[in-house]
Amino acid sequence: MPAFTDLPLWANLAVFLGCGLVIAFAGVRIVGLGDRLADRTGLGEAVVGAVLLGGTTSLAGSVLSIVATVDGNTGIAISNCLGGIAGQTAFLGIADITYRRANLEHAAASQANLSQGVLLVVLLALPLMAQALPGWTLWHISPATPVLLAGYAFGLRLVREAHTAPMWRPQQTEETREDVPAPENREASLPGLLGRFALYAAALAGAGYLLSQSAPVLMHESGLSDTLVGGVFTALTTSLPEFIVVIAAVRQGALTLAIGNIIGGNCFDVLFLAFSDLAYTGGSLYALLSESHLYLLALNILMTAILLLGLLRRVKRGIAGIGFESVLILLLYTGSFALLAALG
Image (cartoon, rainbow, N blue to C red; front, side, top):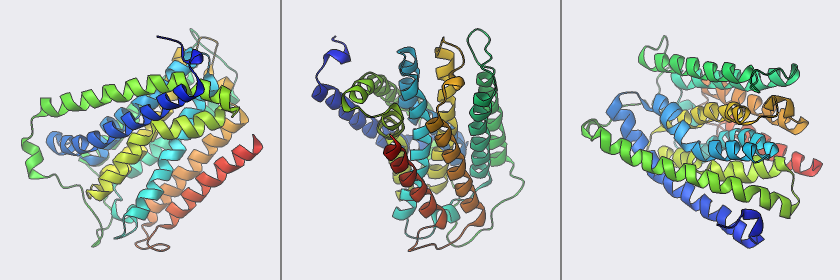
């Protein structure tokens, strides 16, 4: 098989677009399976969205970041992680536009989703702290990496407890959509559901690897920075499953699953930095965070805080039926990447 650098630009672009189609196809199939698994296992939409769907739909991006790091394209690896989180948060704004009955954050507020949002802010703050400190490593691994992994694991335990034994519940209104399991899903074959889920997960991982090979070629040929290639093009392409899941879940009325998948996927995406640091042998990966990367970290914290405020404030009707937080998130996302593009 020829190296991707030996292929013409049109061939790399075809690979890039083809991977996008594979990711979109697998994402469509995996959302229905995720909803059924939430009912069949009794874990609930928020937990399945955070752990199973969030981690699986992030496989393409995870593989891309790891392989890009091994190949020496650390800028793309980092930008893919941070840009993916911002893009996926913006997907909720688009999903809010498609849900006309009420503000999405009003209808899907839950303690589990709020807990995930707080966990995401904590995880995003850790790379900022690691970048500001000396680049200490042990066996070429930064101390921030095990802290990130442990924080994620502990946070998932808190999210699970928030679902099984919530200490408070959001006030119910006529537009609130609770996570109520469908009776027919309780009788589905668990091995069959898991087998199909694993098949689509493998497709996502394979697409992520191919993207990691074609993206650097496209960056070199186009002359764009790694922040834009990784933060926009590869991030949005590998985030297609999240976009498919959130739109499909909203259309199916699984609103808690929609928000849980995005926030849970974002929490898992922060671990891309930990995985990439494990793969990086040149010291601490966090020491390589550029000014653009720091800007993206701060942007993600700001967008997540706005989303949390929307889940807490729970405005029933916003601007033209869209919540104020969705408008702000979309403006921040488009404005920020337009600014980064202008600055080169």
